[in-house]
Image 1: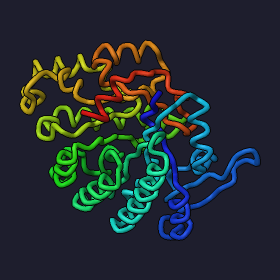
Image 2: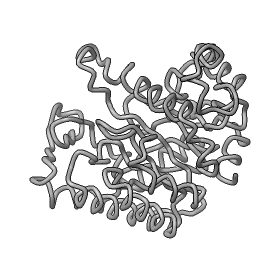
Image 3: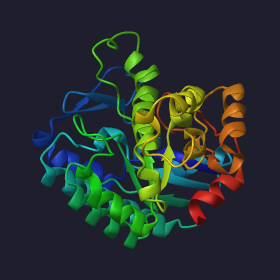
Image 4: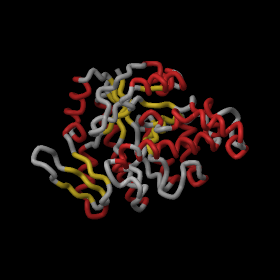
Length: 312
């Protein structure tokens, strides 16, 4: 069984954070004697540094125990660091990617990995993507854009051109929503995370970008957010409004089937619907391990989806 949505922080990255803690405002906080320290970066994201996050041996043991034979490892969104000066983002990207490349070389039967890139400078992002894939990584995990720039903006053209040239997997993983209405009851995570994916993926779909860069393999986290479950609304808008259809060569449902989707849904009926709509070969097993809100172990052992994204 594969797990195409997991996260890990190599020891080299933790060392970099400790060496640069004042620059990136990193803090280690003890919240409970029964929990590991929580890492908070730039006052935004706090998460527990469980052993399965930071200990390579423990990570592999947990995967094996759950029956996962191969994992696609991603850097964690908390360390994308798009809010920092581009030199900082580039440096931690380089450290992270080299460490992951070294780890997967030592465990090639068990592990593949995606890079993190300095998306706040698309030219440097393109260079880092090219370098990371040269080291053996399969593509990159990125956020849904920058705070004021969508991924379809011409600003990101150098990045998309390189991703298309490399036939890269681009895993779009949301950050916590900063919508001021979602400040309570864990809503930034519960609905804000899939909402950020929904906005980003809908913009990608309607923009014509999938036609412009047909070799990029875009994987959407958490079952694609809310987009697959409202595709009928987009199809109707396509029929009614030229502003929806003008950049498309086919109805939105056809473009939806050009994304890949993980299975982090916790809902068998929702997963069955997703497979029915986009096809089994566009759905890959994933868990979001080892975050607290993970679907562990993966519930879907579909090999056709894995083969289509790794080998397409």
